Length: 484
Image 1 (cartoon, rainbow, N blue to C red):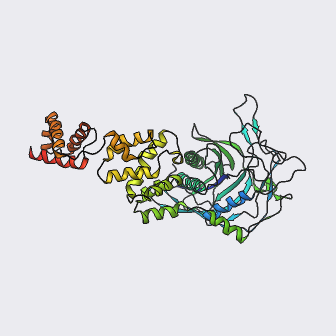
Image 2: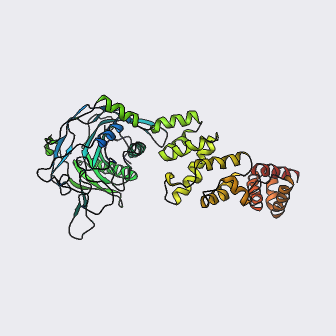
Image 3: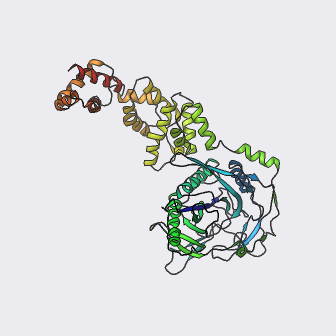
């Protein structure tokens, strides 16, 4: 990183969010991902002479959602513009976008950093536009190929103020935007597939200076971690240039994820280079009071509201609530569990522990999970009632239940013989057997190495095949050792 006492980074982000609509922004072409190249196009999306674009109302509604969620002011009278530039992936030779009347103005994104600090990042605007096609450089040895399936897909561009100072803050900002668009169901947030893309405008200036340095735009960052890596590298690169009395050149740079470095792509364009003018083929879009009321009513509970409710109503720690709300479907699954039980902490532990571990191992989402919240609540009740201990529940009952999801946990406990043994004489016999196998460790315990209690309890649990009650076992081990 750059020396904190010398330079300050000034960073603004532009995040392109591909909206999950059935058709493109201004035509009826499908936007299905993964279709054969150039099969989801039409004369409209290819810009053939004489064709006329049409508004996609669903895209407008989804764009309003994100604006309301981020406290933006919604522009009531929206005009579209043509952004003119020539590039192979832009079939019309211009892009339909919003210039002087962005749909959403202002707003803010509240982020939480890894050290627990919170910061509010202001937004400049959120505007609507259409996507370009996709250039493919690795399909042919000699030529770049272009797939126009993506051309015309509805996008929003979220533009931040230059309030970001570090790669960590940028990481938190993009993470929050991705979580929010997933909660709103307006985008899947998949950066690897390009449905969410981020460009970073980075400059540095001496600490205390109010004058902005020369801005460099960095593109081609296909993951949130790469956004941080690219920004961190670019800050160091610019600092080295200034330290050697050089000048930072205003340009657009790409990011090489393998090398962790940025590289020059082209000279940075200015607004005048794009020759914006009003789109003559589209009438203005007017946002009415009724439309705003309808969109607001269709919005789900937002992550920060859910976080406050989880900590207040269920007594969850900030950490547990944060982990749960990171994924909307996990949070909803948790709420279904606690509708059957008041063991809120235990329910959170199961969702973020055994359940998430199983899903990650099998590359599944929780919406594909075969067990119902009622079944998980039943496991929690079995543990609370002392019928089964936590170890048996996670290591034996849970795996078996996944294999036979049509059964209830109580039924399987009986079939597998997992009921906890509380017979003190039976447990005492096991303890004495274990202690007899470890005379040296027993002596060490008596000499003050009390941490060995875990070894003895663990060995007893093994001998009982997990059926011994851990709490009773722990107490009996201590009692027998003290009496020996």
